[in-house]
Length: 388
Image 1 (cartoon, rainbow, N blue to C red):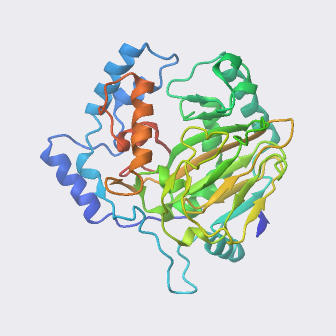
Image 2 (cartoon, rainbow, N blue to C red):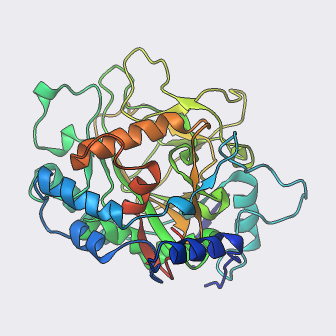
C-alpha cells in the first residue's frame, strides 16, 4: 500500500538485561554513562576534521576499544541467529508501535508486507545538498574519517578516476555532517519512531550510486535480508529508511521486495555464484521460494520506503546510461542489545566485517570484535542511549 506522509511514547522494560549491565559495571569498577557506551575519547577521535595517520589511528582505536568493555553485554544467539517468527495471533500488531502518526491502514500494511512507502517525504533541496556532498567526496575535496568509498567490481583499478562515475557506494558516513543530516531529518525520525520507539540509534548509513551495468550484471544486488549484517536484536525494533534521490524504476534497478517475508527467520547467506563477479559483502539468501510474489518499488525523487530487516529484498541491473542514487540509514532502538553470532549463519559476515575494520584502522588481527565495529559507528539521534 502506498500512502502519503505526517509522536509517540514507547519503551520496554529492560529487566534482567539492564540489571546485568549494572552488575557488570559495578564489578569492573567502571561507571556506565547515561549516554551509553561511547567515551569522550571515542567522540574526540571520530570527530576529528581530518583522517589521522594510520599509526595514530591504531593507537587511538586501541584506546577507544579499552573504553568499550561491553563483554558481558552480549547475549548468546540461538542457532538460527534470528528468533523472529510469525505471531500465530491473526490481528496482533507486532511490528509497529502505538502512535498517532500511522493510520490503521498504514500499520496493517507494514504488519502484512514488512514495508511502508511514503511519498515525497524528503525535499528536493535536501536531496540536491546530499548530491553535492557526494560529488565533493568523490572528487576528494573532503576526507571523512571512517567512511568507506566503494566502487563496482567491474571497474578495474586502472580505470579509477576521482569522479562519482567510479564510486558505487559511500558507506559509514556518520562523520560527514552534511550527509548525516539525512539521518536526523525530523520527517524521517517521526516515522522511524513508529518502529523503534523514542530512543533511536542510527547504526548503518549508505549513499548508493548504482552504475550503468557494464554488461557483466554486477550492478545487481542479490536478494538478501539486512539482519544478516547486524549483531543486535530484537529485529522488530530495527528499521531501514531508504530514500530515492531521483526517479527510480525497473530500468535503472529499483528495489524488489518479497512482501510478508519479514515474518520468517534469518536465512543462510553467502556470495551468489554469478559469472560476472559479485561486489564485496553483497551476500545473498541461499534458499528462498522463487515463486514468492514480488513487488518492484518504483519511486519518485524524495519518496522513502521503511522496511523490516528480515524483509527479503534486492535490486536489478541498471540498464540505463545514468547512475541511480539513493540514500539510506538503518535505525535501531537504543534499547536493543548485542548478540554473539558464533555458531550461527552470521559467522561469515562477522569475519569480513572484522577484516575490513582491521584494514581501515590499521590494527592487528583480532583486535576488534564484530560488536565493537557496530558500536563505534552507531550514533544517537533521538532520546537516550540505553544499551547500544
